[in-house]
Amino acid sequence: MCLLICAEMYQVSRLQHICELFIITQLQSMPSRELASMNLDIVDLLKKAKVIGPMHLLIRIF
Image 1 (cartoon, rainbow, N blue to C red):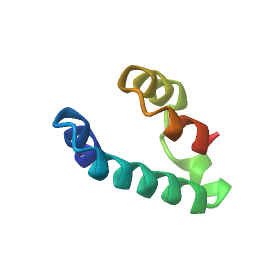
Image 2: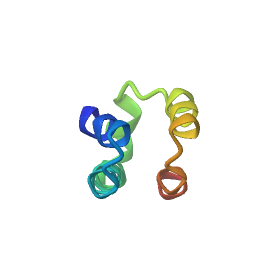
Image 3: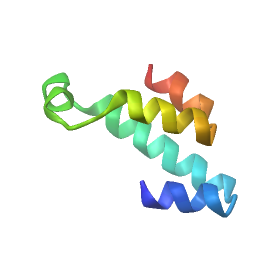
Image 4: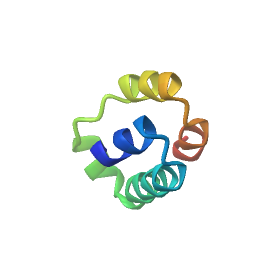
């Protein structure tokens, strides 16, 4: 996640895209039980994504 934040901060779009794809792939491949047991604050993630702006990340997760 830190790498994604740095990529966005320094506007390295290719690295940002790779990080987003990695996160999406990891979330999609996790079993639902594992996702349920994680401490994910989906509302907070959505708020951050809206501020940062990776709309394709939001669309792919949901």
